[in-house]
Image (cartoon, rainbow, N blue to C red; front, top):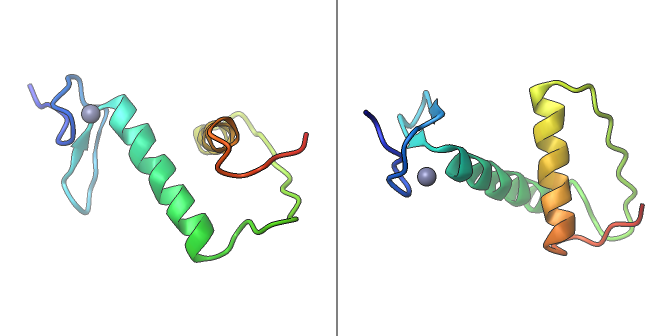
Length: 82
Ligand SMILES: [Zn+2]
């Protein structure tokens, strides 16, 4: 059985098509969170004073976006008003 390339845990939930990297749930979420944070900073998607409106359809993409924004709120990476 395949194990996670980052931590060695089983089971893996995704094998990335381009890199071939296999990740467990926790490493996939962490990896995605880090990429989102890098892209927010690189492309200045959220800057000081910005207001961000989050729409939730209930699909996997919007649920993942909500989870990531919530984790950025919990870790105080960005300041949020709600
Ligand atoms: Zn892992």
